Image (cartoon, rainbow, N blue to C red; front, side, top):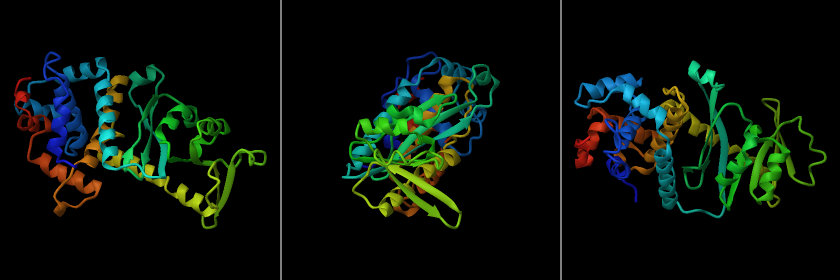
Length: 322
C-alpha cells in the first residue's frame, strides 16, 4: 500500500548505518543529499550547511565533499533498485507495456572534469507507461552514441514490453542486437538511412507532418499492428521528455554541484530516488493527486522543519546519536 513521506523515508533510513564513519555517517550523508534534492528553498549546498550548522548539526561542508569523493554509490544504487521493485509491485505487469527510452545530457562545467576529459554526463533511462515507474538506468561520463548501449536498453524493456526510441538509437546494428533477443521496438530512424534493402529485416512505416513539412520513418518488428497503431505508439515517446523536464525543473538534475565522478553519480541516483519516493507516497486528497501536487505538498511539510536531517529525529530515536 502507499505510504506517507515519513513512513517511506523511515524505512530507507533504517537500512543505513548511523555510526559507520567519523562525523559523517551513511545515514546523515543520505539525509543531506535528499534534503538538497527535495527542498526548493535551497539553491546551493552552502545554504544547506549554513542551515544545519546554525540549527544544531555540527558537520562541515568539507567533510561532505570528502565523502562525495571517496565513497562509492552502492547504497544509493541499492535503494534505487529497491524502490523500483516496490513501485512495480504496486502496479502489476500487463500484456503489453510501452517503455519510452531516451538519454539526457548534463554539461559538466568544472575544470576538474575537463582535465579528465569529461565535458558532459549522460543519463540513459526509460519509463514504463503502464506501471508508471522508471527503468534501470545508465550513467555514462563522456561522449557516446545511444546506439552503443544496446545491452543496457535490452535490460530496460520487459519481456512483454515495447521499446519506443528516437533517432539517437537509429542504427541497423542496434536493431539487430535487439532482435537477437526478440525484443520488440519502435524506433524512429534518420531519413538518410538506406531502407530499400532492409524491408526484409524490419518493417519501415513512413509518416508525413504536412504542417511542419517533416517526414517520420519508424522501424519496427511489430508485424501484427497497423501503421496507425505504430504511429500512436511512437507518440507516447514524449512521456520520457516529460520525465526529464520534471527531474530538471524540480529535482535539480541540471544543477550538479559535485566536482568528482562519485559525487555526480550519487546526486543523479538521489534525484531518481526522490522521484520514486514521490511516486510511492500518498498525500491528503485535498492537495491533489498528481506528482507535482505531491511535490508541492512536500514543500509545505519541509517549510515546517529545518531539514530532513532534523525531521529524522522524529522518525528514528537513534538519529540523535550521530
